[in-house]
Image 1 (cartoon, rainbow, N blue to C red):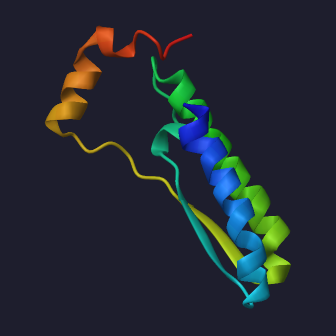
Image 2: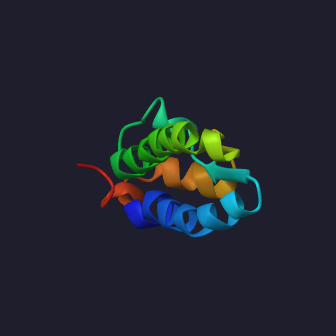
Length: 99
């Protein structure tokens, strides 16, 4: 959960920052989630990873502003699709995500 939602964003950003700085700036945009601010039950790992991404974004924005690199996070909420409805209603889908 952390690799896909936090670590990979960190590693990718580290790869592109030197190129952006050499080209006069750029923008890094991450996809976080509303769960980072209002974590629901049974989604602790996901919510923690997305909260970490939000805080990483804030820190990187402060560190990279002088290099003209903007760092932003988009934090969408859930869209009630059939798959989401099934996941939310079925406790077996959450067996490995709770504490």
